[in-house]
Image 1 (spheres, helix red, strand yellow):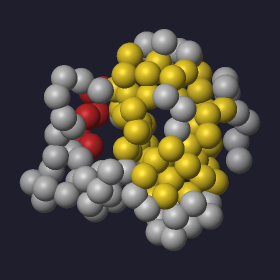
Image 2 (spheres, one colour; image 1 turned 30 degrees about the vertical axis):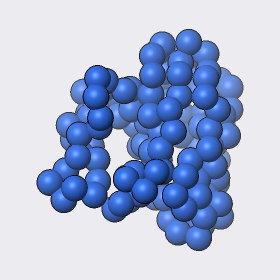
Image 3 (tube, helix red, strand yellow; image 1 turned 135 degrees about the horizontal axis):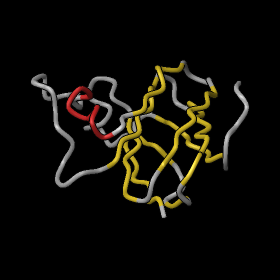
Length: 116
């Protein structure tokens, strides 16, 4: 595991939910992601815009390419029981943390984070 930068926020992934703090101060943050579910999960972090996240033509996953301009950060899928760190620099605003495995976002696997 890499050296944590800034505060460490615990993010728990389960089938099909993400538990995370609701607010954090702006700056460097380490998201410590613990996969507590039986399946593999990834974690993506992106600033929220107006409206819903854009979906791919499959209708089951978020269009990550369309979010690249919003500073999309991603943590590759981790197996059940894996604990991984994602280091991010967050500016004030609203962000969404989500898993983009097929159907997981639509199944409720997302959480909003407000950065002050």
